[in-house]
Length: 309
Image 1 (spheres, rainbow, N blue to C red):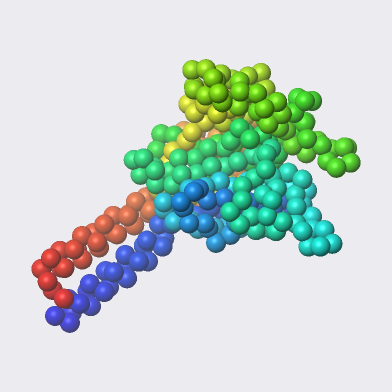
Image 2 (cartoon, rainbow, N blue to C red):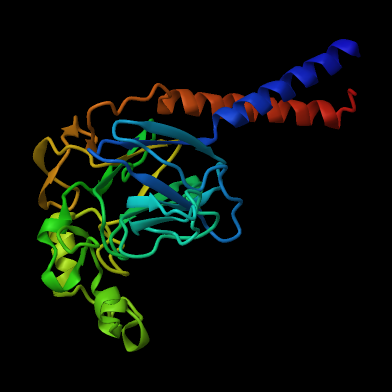
């Protein structure tokens, strides 16, 4: 009887340790030539991550683990400072908390967003990079070790601030630098641009000349509210690297056949790569761990049913 109890405790230990490994890891990398203050907002009803905002100097990175059922968004804040009263604020992507930590607040548009829903329908992670709320900084999301037909990189690696239409531009305090690009919805607050009112369906809300500027430059990113078909991606058993200011290497075709300046495509699985995008947990090893976890749980259940402890 003592050996049976020991065996059960041993399997439970394996279960706990493997469950920790199977949390999703986000590695956030700053390849900009300036400091970025990432912000994180968890979806409603989802427990917040330990960090909701932090500083990331040029060349630095930070790794954050999220539970398998987490959902939320990441973005980068720029041109941030603290006044004499200790109030923290940013010119782009500010979350209004007056602190480096956003504490449950989202980004004030315009801001480039990386959005995730982990372990969604079919056990898949759903993710995208969205310009629906405008653009402030280049961003790339690279899945690591995942599987699936649509488990590919996405993002907007082009500097859209320079190409931003004049009526959408956001300038620095002194007016000398274009620091962000508004969405047409934010700029004009019109239903046809916001997909609201009589335009609140996919059939009535169509791409505008403004959203097409974003889509042409960044064909894998959301350019307006109903841009789902070319902008939503899915992975099973993946971790993710989120990079600010990734360096474009070559011009390749995206999954939708658009030509755009994006990081190099690696091999036949249509996955963008960039310098330093390495991770040591392969999809095979994650799948194996899930299999071991399943066996451990099943064994414990059998032993419990036979009343062996």
